[in-house]
Length: 398
Image 1 (cartoon, rainbow, N blue to C red):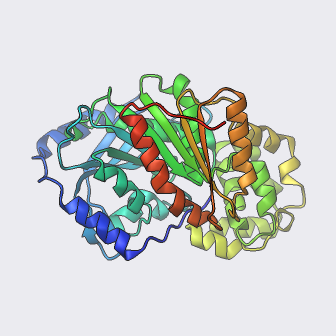
Image 2: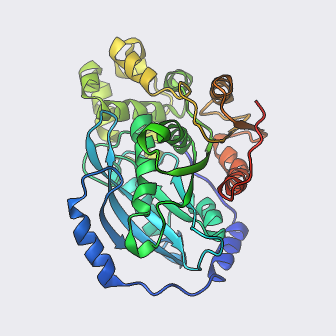
Image 3: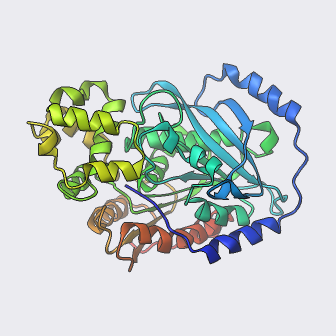
């Protein structure tokens, strides 16, 4: 569920050089942007824009190497896991050069785990120059695609982050694409081809976006979904991480589900140590979560078997990917040596999608870690999605 990609300086510099070669920026109208933001205050439907403020994103810390794109920090409407209208933040990036092949494609990009505190949100890290996943996002920008990056529910906005709640995350991704096409200054079409990509937490989010799209956002012209390192079965992943150095991710998922479903009442089932630890971790970013909770077990936090409580079993089952296959082609990739999300979890998702008749392309990567799976698989996923966006057929390997 975590993603902290380390990209070599040579790759970063290549991306920067290519982006800087883009055509000059379109003339932006601040008056039009302001008017659009004011008009959007009455937004009441999923995907409606509450505000779209111009922003700047950087590739490197210290606000070095500005990414030469038109960028907006978005607040937009989405839907919670329980069906309530909510407000989510995110970032929209649009290349400055005109797109030569018709309507500019829009990618809904779902990031991996950042943490539970608002300061951890992707939009915040991009504005500081600390967002590692911009290296992959930049590959889409180089192709002329617009990219909408959600912060997810409760990460960057009031309320608690519903971390690893698939329904909420899938809605947030789909609504970020809708919102992108409703920012007038971005000049994006609501009839443009769209695609979704994510790894780790983002892989689950991408999978859920694919499953939910036909019923939740049928108007989107979704062409494909790429999902890597997917924690498709939260119960299986939690059992794997119990007592592991990455246990903090499993604990954070418990906090996220508790935020989405009040009846879980996690605090009531914790012991004093569990309440103190999770209260302290409630606003931590991913590195802090892993450090503070490394090696612990659920039994250290609670006198009861949380995963076996009926209320938890119901919600974990609801957030298990695979029951409804996407109607568009899917690219699934997973590292053989993934120490956080066992490859067997991703392979099971592949099997379930295949049995249901989905068009699935599965790639087992030689990488020996979760992070390296993102590095090895990300460029492959991007190239695969680019072919789907331009209309080429997908060949599965079920």
